[in-house]
Image (cartoon, rainbow, N blue to C red; front, side, top):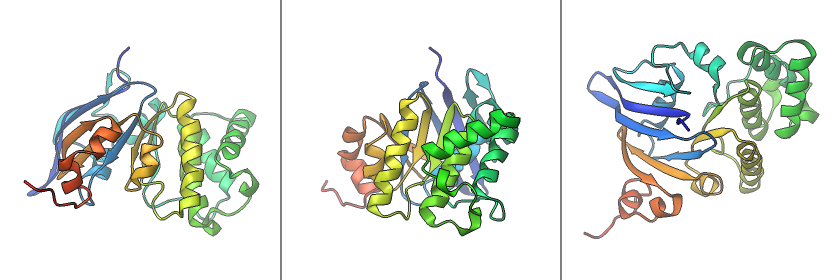
Length: 242
């Protein structure tokens, strides 16, 4: 089976600042991959390079065995990439349902009752069905995060990319969101999840990649990676004896 996603030597700089340094890895269809690293490590930049909102200086993005490096963000979305944003960006003056419908019609290409039915099913899955007619701008943080997830799912993704979706939530809210993400992954959706709430990641992902200064510094099973002295020193700020 071909990998669903491959990064090959992906590099990006802004002047002297390197934000992606020869990033290379691949993930299999159905896998859940966690990405961790300190603030400013280049994690969100990597998402922007994968989804096409940034163009790499060097390297390639391969999605579903296609070289999509020169594809627009919209074209990549229609192929099956969808993402949430670290800071939720709903259409505030529209209802939750209308936000979902935009993703279903514009990204997934659905229409009529098929689009409506698809959105209602996703809203039920993300625990937002009872707020379908509420204006998105009036939602609390948890529900804005759920709406980010809803809009991504309404795009019918093969690859779901989550950018710190658990950030700022209480412990109980985080647990609720983790259950939803586990259910989505169990349905066969491939997931890449950037997160600082490490225990949330550990409950879902099959593999962890650690990024620092735009470079991959570690990759492997979650427990093994989190036990690494290098990761503890760089990511957790724990000084390790030489």
